[in-house]
Length: 553
Image 1 (cartoon, helix red, strand yellow):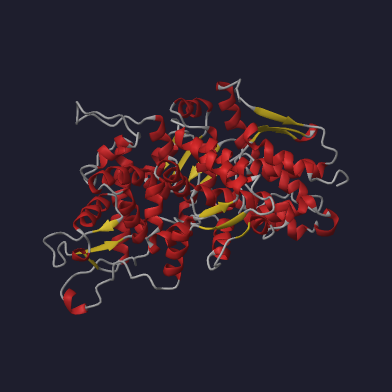
Image 2: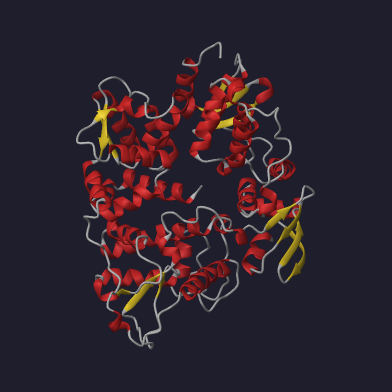
């Protein structure tokens, strides 16, 4: 799960369990702007198109904003916007079915977000009848218009009077980066059992509340014991790690203020501040000043020593705070440090002890040099990782995210015989779907499947899309790790599935596979037999697509 998905899923859960909180949040222009920044590209596009409309428009018109072969992407975007309560559907039949879907989610004690999403997606299938209308939520629309037009008051203005800071030693960008890195590494070191003097009081309780470690109330000196969620946590990217703790932070802080919306708004506004600029503490409320002290412990905000010239009169946001909503779009090359050979030998160019320890969770380390770790991914070590709750997909995702640039070159098998349709199927059946391409590449590959391949199958097109879809690990590596996992789970029971077979053409089969993959309901696929198995929650959309496929395509 990516950072944006994590944030949006959190907001979607608010829509289900605390809709009043979400409405209160949308009433703030800066919070509305922050939510916009976290939206997927197509959902963001739809939001901007409807932003300045003075009235509702036909729901079917929204579908016409995308090509026919990409309509399922439009449905997914609308489903996300509706789950976030950013759009309103005005139709007697459609709105009632959608409201029933949300009501079912509200009454479901398990709080299964996937089930709720599937219910809303099925309800949306009935919304596109003539007469159904759609519009942005008026509160969200007014707030976002105000934010984008520059009418909203600036939340906190940096101190513009240089004389007030005469003689003060302002922290440099390097100092802020070092501070943020030190604070965050202290948390990761603590999780790995290495005590750190940089760990702030209260962080351990937050980790325990988030379910990452076993809470030792009776023995404060005991070393932390990681839960399965804790081991998974170490393999995630830094911003997903931060938000995992912030969700718990929001829950605890909102109990003090009795307003969850005010805590979330504070975090959203932080993302619009400038790194390294001094902001006055006295411009904040007493509760917000308490939040600043708590976020200082996580490395999101820098505070000078109370004995310094700056004292505690100013605070400085770090990059961890200003990138909360977007994260790092791409990892820098110095974070892409892992090379894995097809014989499962691993070479990691790093000086970080934390990265070395993370690798040791699924790699047998044979040699450690000052800037190089050499090891081998073995069955016994990987099985040990599986026993801790880590999955094969999580191991592969970590290796792919940190793969050295030399591993990201396209294989020579992409020659003139490779078609775009084949590439779309290759993407759909790749070892790890979370490493798939952007929406634009998905649309282009789908267009290739449903159009005349002979007209567009040029090597340049194949290579362009392959660059977006290409998974950097060799299939021998992914297959071996997945086989080791399957040895532990020889039989997997998947309830409520639908089997599709007997496709007349390869193009039709490829299109349905891509649709099932995009909707996250693909369970099993056999290209040679043109057979696939999908979850029942996605069957309605697939049936609708199959009924519209030209039998002669």
